[in-house]
Length: 219
Image 1 (cartoon, helix red, strand yellow):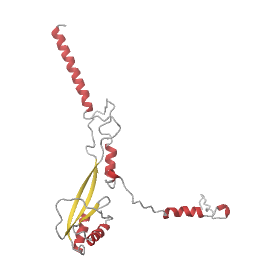
Image 2 (cartoon, rainbow, N blue to C red; image 1 turned 45 degrees about the vertical axis):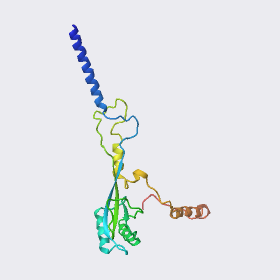
Image 3 (cartoon, rainbow, N blue to C red; image 1 turned 60 degrees about the vertical axis):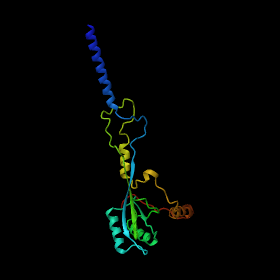
């Protein structure tokens, strides 16, 4: 083999190795996750919806209350939504009227209203509905088309199915951030009633009431 042929053979071998390495590199595009933690996590987004109503010192008029109720129905108000009142006059009557309409939908008023765009004109009150939604961005992720993880790393789509289902099914997306907090009050009278009945019952050996005999045979 001449020197020219040797150089051509070496060049062809180098090119073939380069193509092979580049093909291997395409199997694992993007950053690699070497842990068992999912990088595909739910993201919670909040949206504020506002409605300005005419108010007075005596609260909201009946037409304004009906308008507020229609707005709530249009928004399909439900569990997880938060309602707040932005009232410069801080009228207790206005807050009571808004709370009365919101109670028809099973929602309580929040103490503090979020900051919204613009300002409330004199003689008006602003009702703010805050709604949160959760989703997992970038899912489903089929980046790894070959299903081969040469470095034993976690698949780019790991966690998409579970976390997307949780984000879709959670009743209140805010619970994904802070969890659900209780009121701190515990009602034990109902649960203790059965326990007290069991403790105070006379033992069956002392003439107490025995359990009825039930036959498995039909009549």
